[in-house]
Image 1 (cartoon, protein in one colour):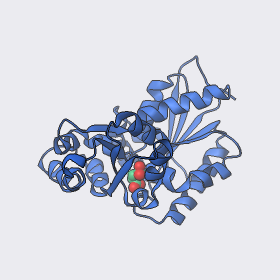
Image 2: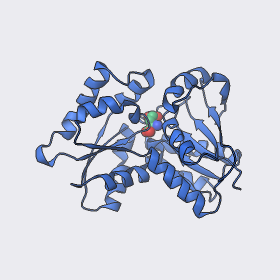
Image 3: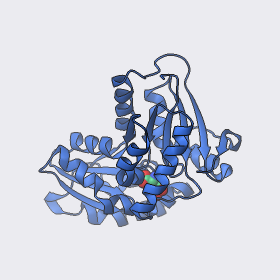
Length: 270
Ligand code: DGL
């Protein structure tokens, strides 16, 4: 079992920020990344639709014989984790929301945490619930920052446009006098790409956390706990998408932090 791949699932290329952290944390694992590029974005779709798409992706990963599934998409983690677990036949399923909430609760001193995410993630309230489970007295202020997804995909990570949109979303969220949040959760796979622009808008005193590194550690622990960690040998990644190998490779290279060729992307139908 330990030689079976770890399935990593996202609505598109955003989850490559999580895959990057996973390959650093688990260098001997064989990963199979599936991006549902034909149907993204998930962040503006209803929870019912996201659940249905996520179940189909889970079934596809199960057909590949994965030993575990990482839901590397905040929107799918927030809306569909129980449904994915039901479809996963008992293999470990790890989402990004719980590790993100964990990182936020570790970082905050005041207990006031701001969350930015997609519309679907904010509306579903999964971050708010996950933070309150860990710290019942926490105050959570959440806001959808949907344009950040498009900015990151267009490569407009920095400069005046990114900075002005970052101010648009973050200034109302953080302008709360002495009760302002001291921690900001980047609750969407795309947002770490805009870190510099976000940092300029928050100023230096706000702690900014995302879930990539904490998720990678959670996956490490989950695989160890059930004795299916692959701890020696070379690691590998296979990439699957539901549409557009050229765009996947072009946009995905930036998210993954290394060059991707369209020939590396295999197209699947869910
Ligand atoms: N991967 C999604 C997330 O983390 C962002 C992109 C989308 O909306 O599909 O919420």
